[in-house]
Image (cartoon, rainbow, N blue to C red; front, side, top):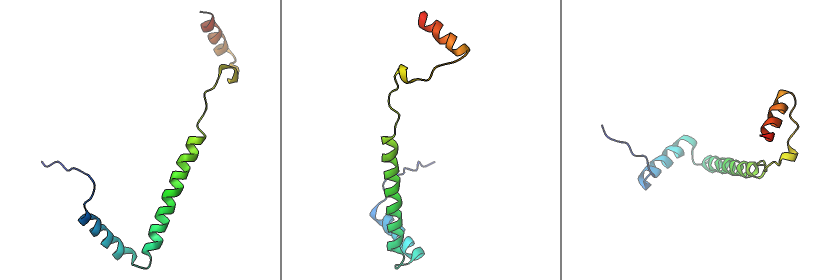
Length: 81
């Protein structure tokens, strides 16, 4: 059974894909298709950058909310030990 290796497409394969895209969308609509694809990639990258900027910071013990009930008792006994 042959092993299928997926790698970078050759120039010939890219040419075939470009011809298929040209036949499907037509030469007039092709710039609009690539423009919308580029805008989608740009918005995706911007969203990734924004998510990284809003990452949670390290929280100190003083910033944590107080624990109530039995959990508070367990925390206090662990701290004393």
